[in-house]
Image 1 (cartoon, helix red, strand yellow):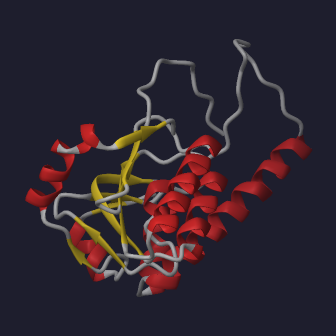
Image 2 (cartoon, one colour; image 1 turned 90 degrees about the vertical axis):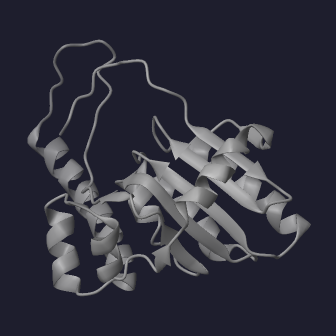
Amino acid sequence: MEIFMNKELEENVLAYSIDKRMIWMDIRNSITNRTAFSFGQILKALNRKSNRDIKFFITGVGGDFFAALKMIGLIKSSQSKVTIVAHKFVRSACFTMTQAENTKEVLATKDTEFMFHRAIGSTKTNGKKFLRFNRTDHFAMMEWLGLMDGLQAALFINRGTPISKIMGLFYEDATISFQECKQLKLIDGCFDEEELEDIKKDLHNWRHVKG
């Protein structure tokens, strides 16, 4: 179990363009239920407008696994096919989200780093220095972590191969490169970095929502 001290963190960036059929998500703090809700509202708005393909740009540190699973489900059920574009780095739940089923394709810029991350339990301290757990509490946490790890692993091996290699990297919490990710068939190809930079410059014109 990890105990995190309270500290000021940057806000996530979640924005979209109806006309461009694009969603931008930069998780600087953590994926939360609010992130999943806002993402669902954005997908609804885009699907109401048209069933043309959507590009979903993702980078970030990860966050709540069950909120990420909700977003994976929303991508899978979207009437518009979604192309996922990873860039800069995708860690933990952000990496897991790139493995959503029913996508058109999964792309990344060549400088992207991908980090596997097994589930970690955390408990709010509410300012208290010590937390007490009994044996039952510890085993209950182990059950939850094992369940989350199994769900994550299933998503990775559903797309990627060889399974033994992927499972080993997952167990090691490994960070891999674009080329390694492509060799493992966890992504389909490359997204042009210059095009990404042009999109970033236009972000201030997009609609921004709380995420």
